[in-house]
Length: 618
Image 1 (cartoon, one colour):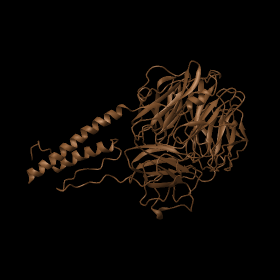
Image 2: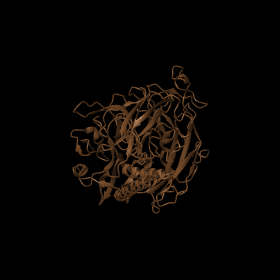
Image 3: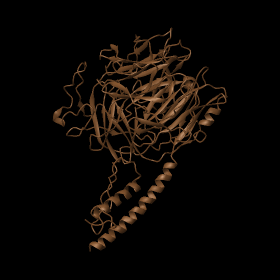
Image 4: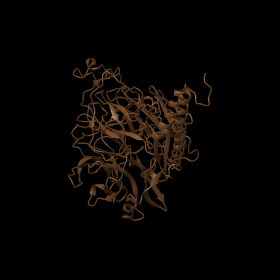
């Protein structure tokens, strides 16, 4: 019987091997086809550009949900004379111009639901460098914005964050480095209802381009600033400065202490590039390519050697112009970088551990072009298929235009998280999102919510509710937690299905995490305590009892919302009792059929005592 069973098992293994070979061939062919496809004409973007003369000054573009219908619409900014335009998305990635939209004649900057009525409001350029808030008063079938009285005279750099920790969103605005007319960082404190007070101005060290986030992990908002020879400014040596917040809006220069006192270093963005649960930095040194990565090691930043493999020649016209974003273009669960500056745009694929490789040519010939800081990029799921598409600048023959790139990389799983804060900061700026392998404390993603714009280049796509996108590879489900700011309330939702969008509310049941020493915020005595499973650690790891949280988001046109998690592949027994298939390891990155074939080979080998029939028995 043993010989017959071995023969049957051997036959099963041969079949599995053939299936494996077929999968390898198919997977290799698919991998070779990985690309972004230029759909500028198909998307309607070419027709939009053709509505303006060749000399039209296209200055940036944004993907924002203007009409609150769940898909991303397109803004095309115009500098020096107006004639910008807005175009509505049909939900499948085709844009049609929106007539009679005077509010779209300029350039968009920061976008958020300022008055918390469920519709996006925005700042547009006023004059040469000023900023004006427009309040969304759209109704079904009609898109309209009202010009508000809220404005700033020179706001080329903007951030939205609750800087003073009172639970109300504030607006940070700043002119170029060296500006004589409007020096300093102006802070417009919000009332939580859509109104902003007259600004408080702080000068810090005279730098600009505030990047506001909690870089030391103590629960309040710190600021990184930049200086350098921005066009039309006095010659100023490029550098970065770090200012630590003591929790009472007193900022101290700690640049040397945190390892950023590096001549020529310009930090353009941030994100957890190495997946260890803190915020690292992305930048450029001395205007030279490739980009540089500074890893966060308990609040001190250390340059990672040879972090980015290309391009190895060339450089930037200015180091401090531009912006970087960490996201996941191929949904493999490893962060990728989009980074642009004056006349260049780089797409960098994450290879793990904080390493990246240049992908512009490999991924379909993504154009690296532009002019002045008006160039840039936009990203978001414009066709509702769950992956992130790109829009890049094109500058050819003195004609400023755009390219739309559809993401046609092999399909993998994803999750979209919408943290919904308490009234006053419903956009959840400053919140810390963590994504875990289902049922474990294995951290997959960490992101602190930042909303900023440098010139016309925003830090993320925009829906009326803040949304962040995370790739999952082949994982079928994950656990998600949000540590809200400034309350420090942790809300966790377990068993979130892949390819869904989940909303997590600050006013759901949760646990209040004690702030670090020195914080002015004391715990809320009415919050959930240890009797409800014990407070989890501040990084959101799982307590002994799950925390009730999370509600389905409305349909955003990109897959089922909160669909039940996919059941893992089960072990199926053959008539002879042979275990013929193992569930693929979550996150293996292999296509399901290929993972099944690998499992079949391994299972049959175990059935034969760790050998194949050609191998001698012990």
